[in-house]
Image (cartoon, rainbow, N blue to C red; front, side, top):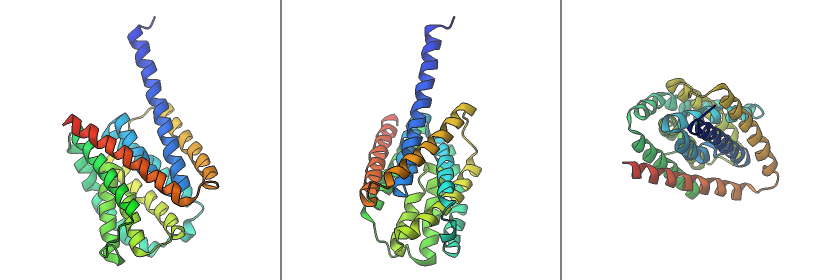
Length: 252
């Protein structure tokens, strides 16, 4: 017969798996609802649940898949010429982000991830205007920052969002290009770090959670105005980022 300790461990494992599934469902829902937000909402929770290394790379995997699903219907609207400098710059800095993340202690990674998520959410909420984030130079700067942040902390989207704001893109222009960028930069990040060590049942759960979240988000998108939805996503991201920052600082 299993001991009480073994039974408790099994129950705890199942709780972790169910919480993981719920996090992915929520992240996929808000991504589908607001066009942004999976990494911002999910990364703090995944990092607290799985640790910085596994949490970030799982977020990279899931965000890449969600972007690919969204891109399937909008790929004709992608501005390939505009995206080349963004993608090329990200490709150069993804390895640096992965190298840094592999060598920092866990509390430092937690604090760093929390800080990056919080600052990114605050900047996107304010729609910061930076003249340097325009043209090819701005695309290279945004791509370089995004690639490093994506591979080290899983949150490469805000830098691209700030570039889009300063370039004067509409939401309709931003979404397909952001999805294309998400597919490419997350593929770079996963290649640099490898897949997270999850069991087959957990991978199946993550896939089901992405599908369920996408369906839920699509249904909500028909009922919730875009601006309140984006604000809700960013507030959730800010709260999660601050929580992760505090936990990291507490562990130092």
